[in-house]
Amino acid sequence: MNGRMIVYTVGMLLKVEAALMLLPLAVCLIYGESPLAFGAVILVLLALGQTMSARRPKNDAIYAREGFFIVGLSWILLSVFGALPFVISGEIPRFVDALFETVSGFTTTGASILTDVEAMSYGMLFWRSFTHWVGGMGVLVFVLAVLPKSDAQTLYIMKAEVPGPTCGKLVARVRHTALILYGIYLAMTVLLVLLLVVGGMPLFDSVIHAFGTAGTGGFGIKAASIGYYDSAYFDYVIGIFMMLFGVNFNLYYFLLLGDVVSVVKSEELRWYVGIIAAATGLIAWNILPQYGSFGSSLRYAFFQVSSIITTTGYTTADYSLWPNFSQAILVAIMFIGAMAGSTGGGIKVSRLVILVKSAYRELCTMRSPRTVRCLKFEGKPLEKQTGSGIQAFLTAFLVLFSLSVLVLSLDQFDHVSNFTAVAACINNIGPALGVCGPVGSYAPFSDLSKLVLSFDMLAGRLEIFPLLMLFTPSTYRKK
Image (cartoon, rainbow, N blue to C red; front, side):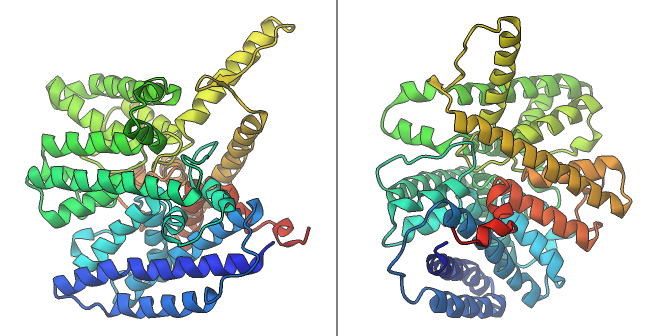
């Protein structure tokens, strides 16, 4: 394993995190708050980052093992240092709580231990939500975009960080691909901010909620989340943009090229939109008696379905008070998640489609054993490696999920709280049901449970294997 290149890349990441903290530091100065917490951490990050990346190694090759290791280690360090401003400022004095909040931010989960978010300072609120925006597209993807040089083999970093069963380049160079992705990401974020400001939302609130929507994270600055504004305009604007950020960003690149046909033919996109439409319709029908009019029930159903399937986690209503049928649908789409290559979490629609097709093919094979059927996805034959990768991912997912629920059961909360808490964290959603429902928080859980859920959030965002590789002895053996 190329240890020197790993150290160099992680050092670059720490310097990038220091640069990112300049924004919340500036917010502190604008609102007359103390910038010392961010200033101290920035100095530490710069000192460590410069020491680690002072000289680029001559052997700068990065292969699969290095790529996965870099991504796993970087996200842990990013979260640890990102938690320090909360601790130093005293706004989240306990490190375990601050780490949980920061991991939730960078992984775009939106799960929170805060019981009074409105009491936080502007600088901390900004940093808390800005982590969503940074983590949404991937911080290593951001580093690839800004690095002056990036070898073609850094594709392994992108493969380890970009969610979905497959990852490829849009253009010949990885750095150009990263720039294209972040350019689209930034443009959509700015557009959302403008639409929210036009609707009457204050600029600071608009920026914060745009960060949460773009990163499909869900941290809010009001106890009632988006429901605080009680506006159909905001509900539909944010709901639509949550859907848009749950779409594979490759499709937006095709739109820029004028290739509308490729977008329309996207099999995963059709399933994604179909699932949202079906879930919205069923829930709107089911909650109609509670809201009195179909327009109101459709508004709340659409927003919550869009929020949950994209794993954003914003709320406009306490869905724990909805009928069991509606809650069951929301829990189901927690696991489905958004499209591959988006900022959303979950198992991903593409994996679901492939699994359904695999099951149907097995059924047909049992009926006609001599018939050979080719499994296709997006109009192309599915590679055997992709299929086996999905099976390995689901196996690891189920094992981690089961063990996490078992550990949380030590806290003596009800099964609904334990099960949905793990589901919400490993799928990067945030609010669950029971103790940690839309009007609750994760504060009641023990430190052990918070650490397990933090691991789940990281594993869910990185799709398990980059994080597990850090704890696998074979990773450190020489070939």
